Length: 344
Image 1 (cartoon, one colour):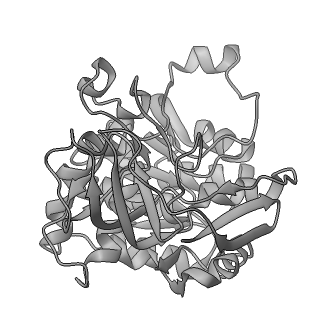
Image 2 (cartoon, rainbow, N blue to C red):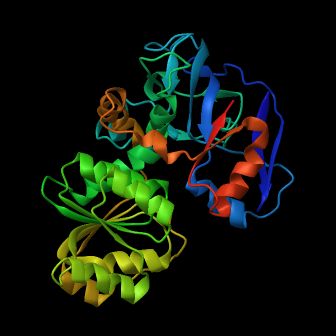
C-alpha cells in the first residue's frame, strides 16, 4: 500500500509500505477514504531529527472496514467508520471515566508497529472499542465534516467542556487555527453568548465569525491582552481556551483570564516552563485541558453534523490526493492552508 512517512524535518514521502494484516483477534483493517494533516503534525515537520527508519504519519481518518478479527463485534466489513486519534478498548477503568486517551490497553497511530492514518489501509487495534460506525455511505458529502470527529472538533469541544463553558458565558479563544476555530464552534454550541477570538489571519477569523465568534482581537502580547480587557470591562473573561501551544499563547491566556477564571490548554506545548508562580496562586486561576479523549465525544457531536447544526467540514480549505501529501504539509507549514484534506 501507499502511505506517508516522515523521515525528518521537512521530509515527508509517500512510499510503498507492507499491507496491514490482522495480528490480534481485536484488530480490524480499515480502507481509508479520507485523512488529513493535523496541526500537531507540523511540530515534528519543523523539528524532527533525520532518521533512516521514518515514521508513518496521520492520526485522523475515516474509511470502510475491510476485515475484522474474531473478537470484534459492533462493526463489520462494509461499515463506514471514523476513529478517534488514539485507539482504546473503551472498557478499562480510565475509559469508563471518559479518559480514553489514557486507556490501559490503548495507543497511538504511527507508533509501535501500528499504521498511520495518511495511507491506503490501517490496522486498527482494539477495533471494537475504537471505531464508530457512521450512518452514511462512503460517498456522502458529509464525510469531511464527520472526519473532524477524529480529532480537531473533539479537541475544540474538550477545551470548551474543561473550561466549563455554559449558556450565557463570555469566552476567549486564543488561536485561529483549526483547533481554535473548533473551540469557537464548541463554545457556541454550548451556549456561550460572547466569544472573543484572538487571531490575526483575516480569512480564518472571518470563518471564526461564521462559526460564532462575536469579537476578533488581532493584536498580540500585552497589546492583545489589553484589548481583551477593554472588551470585557477591564477584567478579562472567566473562560479561556488556549489552542496554540507556545509560551506566548499560555502567557496571553493567563493575562486575559479574570481572577477565579479557568484556562483550558489544548495546544501541544512547545515549552517546558510556564507562568505558574506565586502571582498565579493569588489569582485563584484553574489550569485544565489537555489531550482530548475524542472517543468520549464522537457520539455526542455526530448528530449535530448529520442534521446540519454545525459544519466543521469548512475547516478544510484544500483537498489533495494521497500522492501530494508532502505538498499538504508544506501548505500548512507556510500558512497557505488552514487544514488539508487527503482523499485516498
